[in-house]
Structure formats: C-alpha cells, structure tokens
Image (cartoon, rainbow, N blue to C red; front, side):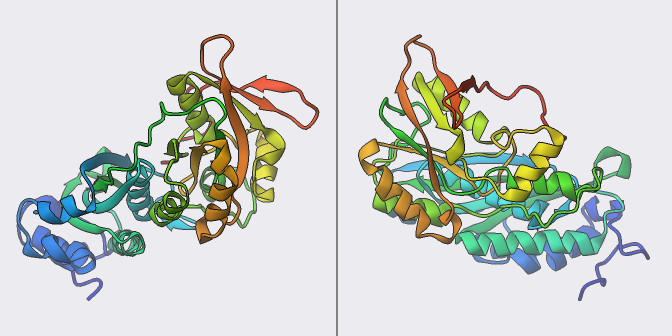
Length: 351
C-alpha cells in the first residue's frame, strides 16, 4: 500500500536507510520497483538479467547497446516526468539505428528527502512507457545519497536491441540528392520544460513530445527499407542532428525554413526569448534521410502513424563544393544563413 514503505520518514520521504542494504532497502525495491516492473527476468531477482540468445538471434544478426543518464528540472513536467524521459530516450536511441528494442536496465540515484509519492509516479511512468514501447525493464540498481549530493533524482538507463540484417543506417550514410524529413513539430520538449520552471511567467498549454518512437520507425522502415540515416533530435535539437549529418556524410544540407513544422506556442516562446526552434530539445522527434525517389512514400508512412501526423520534408542533401560538410537554412525570400553546431547551452539543462 502507498505510504507503508519501511523506513520512510513521517513526512513520506526517502531516508538514507533506503540505501543501506537492509530491510528498508528491501522494502523500497519490493514495494516500488518490483511492484511496477516485475516481469520476465526481473521477477527472478538475480544480480543480472539473462536474455535468451536464440530468441535474440531470430530477431536479427547484430546487437545494439546504448546508455543514457537523465537529469531534468522540474522532475515532473507537462507531458511526462523524468521516468518517461528515461525510457523513451533509451528506446529511441536504439530505434533510430534500426534496432528493435528488447530490454532496458534502470539505475536510480535518490536524494535523501525525496518524496515517496513522487518516486512512485516516476516509476509508474517508466512502466507505462516501457509497455507502450513493448520493451522490458529487466534489471536495475538503487542508491540513496545525502540530500546535498543529488538534486532530487537521477536515472540512468541502458538498452539492448536487435538490428535486422537488411538495415545499415548510419549518420555517415547520407548521399547527395537525399531528402531530409522530420516526424513533427520542433522544440516542444525544450519549450515545455522552460515554461514549466515558472521562471519566465509564460502561460502556455505546451506539453513535452516525450514518446517512444520505435513503432513509428518500424512503420517507416517497412515502407522504405533503404533509409540512409536516422537520429532522434534531443539535446541540440534538429540543428545538432543536421550538423552531425553534414560533417559525417560530408554533404551540404539545405533546409527550407518555411517547411519547418513548429507549434504556434513554441514559435511564440522563441520570438519572445530570441530562440531558434531548430536548437530546442525534442524527446519524440526524429530526423530521417532517405533517397529522393522514396521521399513521398516515407512522408506518407510517417503521416499514417500517430507520432508522425505533422511530418514534413524539410530539406535536401547536396554535394559540398568546399569539400566540407555544412548546413544552410534558406528563408522564403531566398536568403540563406549558415547553421552551426550548437555551442554551450542555449537553455538551462533540460534532459
């Protein structure tokens, strides 16, 4: 029952005893984490998850492995919380490489004094996001530190996926003539987090776009098996992805500014603060690069999926006359500006 956890303070908060390895820690694991995540290998409670190699081999011929640490302020925001972010971020890193996500690990660093009710909401959000993505959380770890050593709650997730042999997706595989697509409006997560902090007294209805993209990626790859590149546009936004693409593939990326899908409220926030939505973080958006002959087919496939209804073609790849990769953004009057790799932090830490 909520609130009956052993070792919890009278105010319903985590104490250092929950990291001590005794009965309080056992109670935390059983009543919070296992209550939400118990399934498959995790139910056995060994010190490691055990995945069947035969089953993995049937899904593909290569393993994909990724890891992420998540920190965000506030821990809860419109459209999700740090738990939603942790699962979706790791699932998406696997998916955009053409991998089918299979299993995740989750490690928690909890600050002494963290509200138990908040921790439960985070863990429950992780369980929901994992179920939505069709992936299992199979192993994990928990540490509790003094309140001055951690800002509430940090989560680290790692993920394993299987790549089918027909997929060779790479940030270095862009070719002159290719077309660049995004699956929806840009900057929703970054703008939502900025407004949720309350520092700017901005009233909006913005929600984070945090979502697992693996089913969207499956839809796209079934329609266009020859996708050259995919990346989820998180920190650094679409600008960061396009800069990496230009450099790794040694191409000129030309972006049509008028084609960029931007939510009116995000556009308003950017105008007030002098920000560029291309640089704002996303947690449910990807950039895909496909041969021009498949561009319309790819767009239709994306738009057929709930997470791609606002998908758009935003640019093209060309041979670089200088021999070096670059990104140019062309406005409706034909003027162009050079888009450079993000430097430092355009906004306070958001993921």
